[in-house]
Image (cartoon, rainbow, N blue to C red; front, side, top):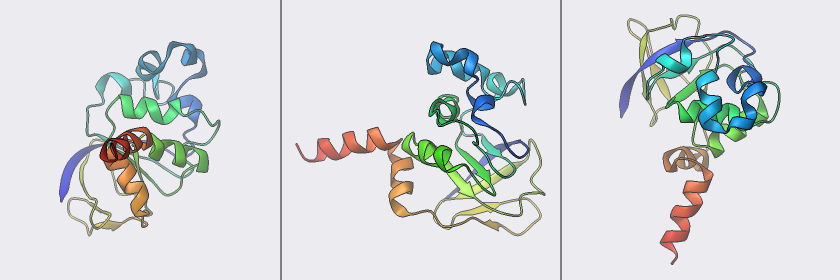
Length: 163
């Protein structure tokens, strides 16, 4: 099943400090999220809507290991981040928190504000007037984690099933 999502276009090398600025780390996720991406897209946190997606350049999530970088995106309702490559630490933190990351090449034609479809069965991105883009495979256990809303929710669901 595919659904339509509005695109927020970003460049390459978006680091964790842009996603979760260090000056706000003591405030918790509710205080961090309103500052997410303010150095790159000042309007982002106030205008992003649940279900929107980020389409970025290479090396998304580089920098520190702070899980709040992915947590701020989850808190704001971002459905997925699509990029040609991700930092390994950000990749794991994102899936642990239930944020879908899609590794995909050929994103140059995806414009800011466009609407795309995501088909999680085939891992394809649908674009108007072009052939769909095929994303790299994602292990089933990571997709299950996203569908559960993150690792902790997945573990809670498993424990409920065994009581």
